[in-house]
Length: 386
Ligand code: SF4
Image (cartoon, rainbow, N blue to C red):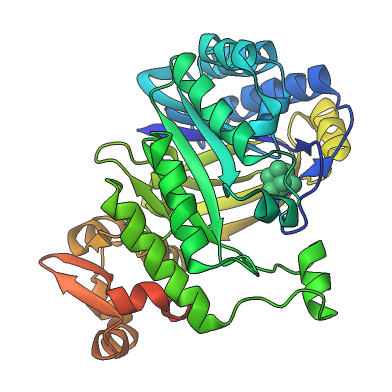
């Protein structure tokens, strides 16, 4: 068995008004203390039985803005992960980066530190849209960053896009997709802008200062994203993710396939499948969200667990279904049987039948997946399994 490791770096130069991630605007940050805490947390977790003997097949530095950290700091975390768990040869090691925070020296340093995949938050190639989204970078900086990434030797590169931004036209979305593809990433993520409670955009929406695009327009833009990104050589493999064949994000596949992962850092979540049936299905836990509290807890106890839940087989089966349904290929009934020792039809027959009748789910051989209509109404399909 192998494992995926998520490393959360919670600092950003500025807080984007749409962002509900556990991230904090900071002019400076306790980089050395934070790296020590990450190392100590990994050491502690490796001693436990949950991940005993498991090596790492993927590592993902997410945030926040991990590219704010020095390459040496990222290298220290990767070396510690290798010493503590062991990193499989050919492991995918991704760093999220803000195009406004990198130059060639930094990217080359990250490559030398062991990063082999970059994910840039491009979001748009229209400067007015970037400004509206509160991004610290311009479209030109994204173009430059992607070119520098290629020069620094990165063959694996993701660009994130955001669509359905108020004021954005369909033509502008098509332009964004074209501009992204020209930079030759091997992967593109395209997310529908959402207004999450607690964000500045949510407050603006409540006060009527921002009016989200209508549902039909959002659906039309999602259809454009699916068609236009695929047309440029990046088939959709997950609701918001597109990749050249063979270049899918292996780390994120761990989440969508409901497999075990360890998350370290402030607010990080972890999930461990039980090794044997008698100890239940699995366990989920999450860390202290505030960076200072996280570091303090690690110094004191070696872990920073703020909460946990035991997942029983029924809940695990629901999660397995709605996570896997995010994948374009859905899931194999055989895999469901192996994981839960029961039949999908027996467990979800009535609920699934309604979705099949409503043309939201379909069977393709041994697999169950969303239909095209199901993709557009995915949230209501998933709600059936919660
Ligand atoms: S850079 Fe990313 S993590 Fe930081 S505030 Fe903006 S969207 Fe959130």
